[in-house]
Length: 101
Image 1 (cartoon, rainbow, N blue to C red):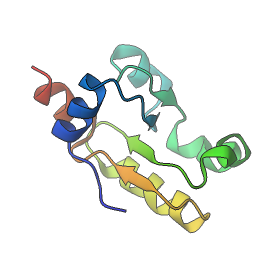
Image 2 (tube, rainbow, N blue to C red; image 1 turned 120 degrees about the vertical axis):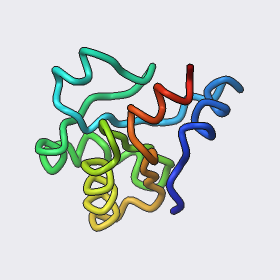
Image 3 (cartoon, one colour; image 1 turned 60 degrees about the horizontal axis):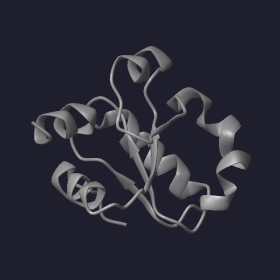
Image 4 (cartoon, one colour; image 1 turned 30 degrees about the horizontal axis):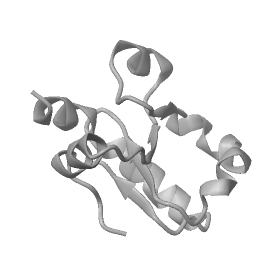
């Protein structure tokens, strides 16, 4: 599945959509600033949380981190685990925050 741009995510949220968003940053990063509605599952704990995510296996999941690197790893991991519609937020939270200004 193609990745998602910050502009596209903002547009969808402004239209009232509530996509499933997973923030793979550390809890302290999530506490400092976050995308509304994002669930915090740090990259290192993602393998332990697969059962919790099973209901979303065939639904769109948007993953993000600070700049896009960790979330690219999360997308690759989830795809390997059989998730069919994982999208990485290009540029991560930094790009999303900058786009929203």
